[in-house]
Image 1 (cartoon, rainbow, N blue to C red):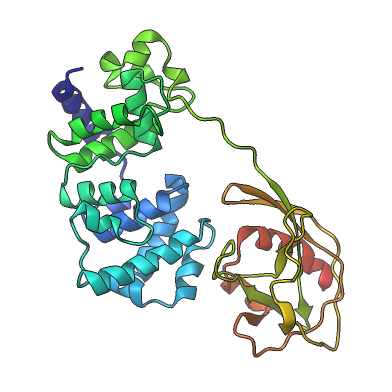
Image 2 (cartoon, rainbow, N blue to C red):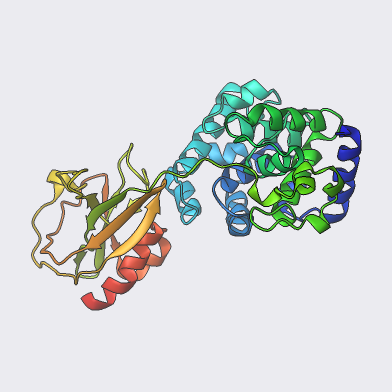
Length: 350
């Protein structure tokens, strides 16, 4: 395979077809970093409004490092995988403390930041600083596996081959553009199920296309079957207020304000409700009707069941509890499953 010819065709296509994305407006490592973390497990279209809001509120690493953690989580709410938001702020504090507020341009130093793995470090190093690092993610794995007709899983046995091709391409020149060009090619042409080979600038170089096996590549390891966990939740209403509980560290959605819930599956029992002994007396119990919703967290399929129960008012002094007026609930960014459940339950409590 003629690497320089491949490189030239790829960048020519990118110059004409590249997506207009807000984080590409400059080589600011902060904005590139925010975008790459947001794009993990999330589609570009979904990220765009979150990126604009987040960077408007926290325009630089100093403002993010100094921000109230609740405000960071609120702006992240809806993107999922909330550990990403907590890691962002932790990494911002690292940049301020360890690098005098400036992002390092060294790959290994970038890798030392909380939540930054090899892909993200390579993306920042190449796009912000022009360093020759291949940002090998699922998109690049797909394109390179097809170009090479690599029949091994690019995440394991086939990784060395696809990474070698990527390293060769970014090693010529403009490594940031090369990485982004392959990302755009994967997003618009070299699609997972129905690749548009006739539109691809690299078609003549694609060994999988020549063999007619492009739809079969890359080889993927079978996904593990999801585990169904049952949980119960409470909509605790006293007068015109709703009880919220801060999710504890080490749990799903840690740090988020949420309605109280616990897993009750027989094979995975949490014996105490998350608000534990701080659950105290209240004058007027309220009940809710049974309702079941499904959601997924970190690849685990969960079932939450708000159920009919007598709930009493809590001691308001606990740090992990708060009462929110129902007419002010729109200002709290709750996890989506809770929002959906409350949308069906609260009208029945009025």
